[in-house]
Length: 184
Picture 1 (cartoon, rainbow, N blue to C red):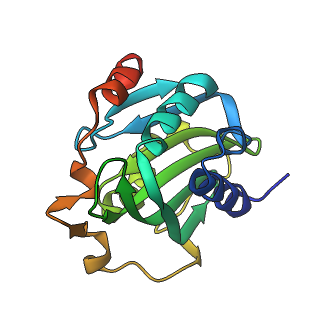
Picture 2 (cartoon, one colour):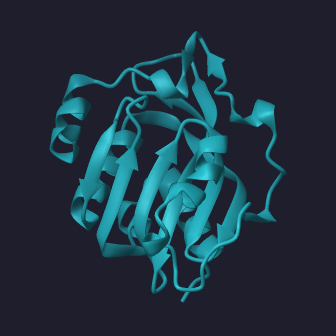
């Protein structure tokens, strides 16, 4: 069984390769995926197939680029990953990107919850704002422990842009938007 950090490194490497089978290797059957309202693909998906389709549609909008971890924060059954994405969408000439964070909950070595956060500070506060009954039996102490990557900073939480569009406001083609309708 992989450690949480190894599972997440594998997950993001699979996203960058657009390898949908590898992306879901560490998902629990009852995984839940949540994207905030500020994201173009906002909504909630449940189960491996819905989450995989959600990721396939989002990743499928990239002509090229990557989403790279900049830091892993782990405590108990929770993990937060600081990310930097820099992509060129199909049909676009400009590159766009941003810094944001994803949060994960693990159970028995599998990912049961996967959330995205526009602001890194919100991701770090997320585990502490979760009701105690949802935390692991070992409990959690905050702030989370940095396992690898740079220390968080105020400027790192701001989205960056190219050509006037930030990653958080990317246009979503209507055929991609339709794929997400069942995830809302």
